[in-house]
Length: 49
Image 1 (cartoon, rainbow, N blue to C red):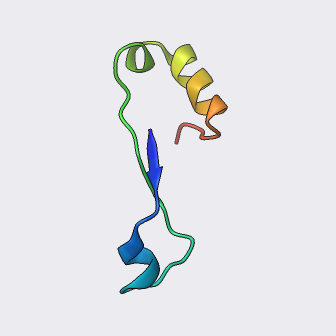
Image 2: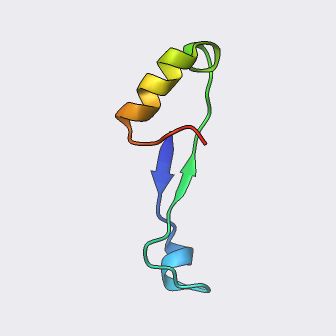
């Protein structure tokens, strides 16, 4: 899981100062075991949508 702020979103064009993008990929145990996945997501402060 990677969360980043994009300079082009903050300073150019739409000028959204608090914008960020989250990219994630669930592989291995995170894909197969929902308990492991949910534990990880709760630790990083994101819920499954």
